[in-house]
Length: 195
Image (tube, rainbow, N blue to C red; front, side):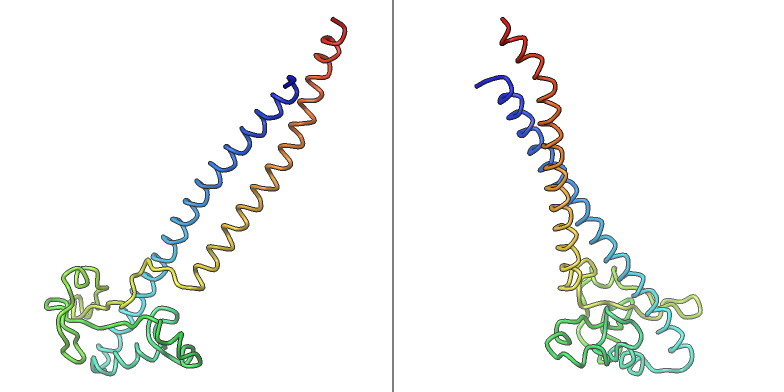
């Protein structure tokens, strides 16, 4: 194996290892960042829905009316309820989370008095605060960090773009590296031929 082949093989191996490492690190970072974004967005939606629920209760609406409003999907699009947007597709409606109003102390649902939720759900409930007092909690039936089909499709598209850009970058780097290696080794080959 001549020197040019050895140097080129080293370059190829180095590029492959570097691109695979960078791709894995970038992919993991993008996945974690996107999941964090989705979770934070959903928490913001829950806080907004809890504030609206507090306004409705302060205005005289019953917890049953507020729960019906949440179930309609009008209060918080994309996170809870089965409002008009989801009624068009029953399969999708069944996969959408519901928002449940709970008692902040016992964890029982305020509308139907159902069994108490586990302590972790009570701790993670978004408080419904009325006149400075926590009067209820809002809980989503879907984990806030769960990625749905639409979110996963976006994440997959981002990962494909990262992979494609790594392949293109690797190809360009390999081509430029081969040209550079050729120009560096050409004088050495002439010197070797002359000896």
